[in-house]
Figure (cartoon, rainbow, N blue to C red):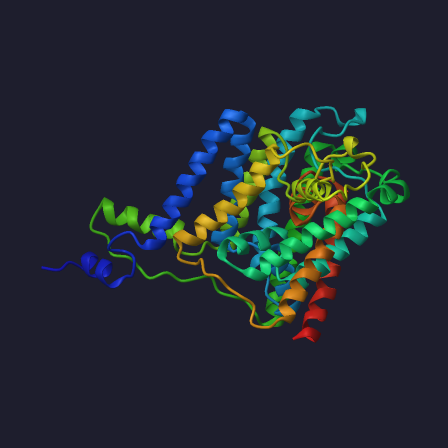
Length: 414
């Protein structure tokens, strides 16, 4: 007699046994384990950042979590499904960051900033960097993290955009000292707990995020574009094995709700801050870019003032291996393994040549913006606001303005 559960397994592709994609994904995770052991041999810190990178990349791909789509869809389509995930992630991270910073700086009136929080000087560089990054990420079709997970899915245009980001970061490295003298060195660092106390700063931040969440919902209803969550067919279970298979499909095959992905990313960011420092990305990409330029004899001048700054600053080349190298590499491999396991990896080549120019140009603009703003949507935004600092909100405001401008640009391109 054929049971209901057996019939479901027989009729569902990939349920009766491991698919080729599953075997490829297992191989990718096996490679990740080998690199973990090698990293452990170099430095335990390397292996920790490798694991965090894998986790970030996996969650980004499973939730298809992209800051560019969060802003673009809000302006272009009138729905905020991704933006609500971003706001929830910010709230989760803010609570975690607040707890850590309260232990690091118990007395906020002494004038000390938390040692590794992304409390950055604000000025024209913050505003212009936010605008440029917002425009660039919409043109390129993804922010830096979004481009990275799409690279793991096989999008050729995202590889082109990433090359553009590296080029933009290199240009910003050449102009860094000018920005340091004209804006960054004199910019104020406004850390809310110094003025409101730890509890007051956290409450104000959470209230602001809650207000933004309500505004997004109102915007959706005004546009008539409320997007329902994904529905899943009920599964018939005959025992533990069927339950474990269903759990595996939920985690590794089916797409995650973006609010779930946002909450998990916020929690991972708080854990990483507890371990050492907030989540960042473009600082390491900039370091590798400067090293590559030096190989061709085009090293930018030594950057002034970076030793006094946290976040994703353009630090000089210090050699091939760095803890953030493993973070960036882990994010790519984590997204690649996640895409393989879900059967979502496929080499995707743009159908129109203009897409290459759009991706490259958007990437260059993104890279330059993140260089002068000392971070992208990860370091300056997703780790800036939870640091309870004004620079995160200022960057977010001009990032939104840039995304709005970029949305109008792509309408013309289309």
